[in-house]
Image (tube, rainbow, N blue to C red; front, top):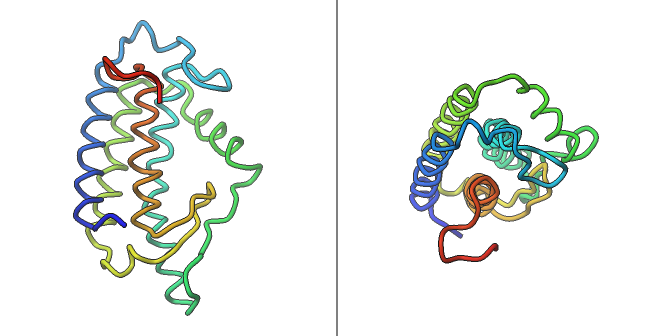
Length: 168
């Protein structure tokens, strides 16, 4: 399980990398398709921005499990219509947003995510949860999977693998 400090460092570094990558996108290429289901670059950026607000809720789920006396395993429940439908709704809500607006939303929400982790007790990060997307593990492990690895994976979707590396 990653430590609180490791999660914070990874949130900061992946957030900085995401901001840098998003700012470097070619505005003329934003309509190019890059993702399964037909999303183009700007829609994938909207997805990255839209999911970031949900991550502090992972801590809330662990707190609720502790308050109820359960032994972990709390769940965010499945989103209405499933995860794909939820993601589509979130992207649609951001239709017409500029790249700059989406980057600013991501950065605001990443700062909120970092603040939430900073305020969380180490013991809370060791609580077991299941995210709304079905990811299970300790809060710290789920954070690493969804708030760090998931976002970094989408950067590869936007730009391709780093030079010298094949696709994952």
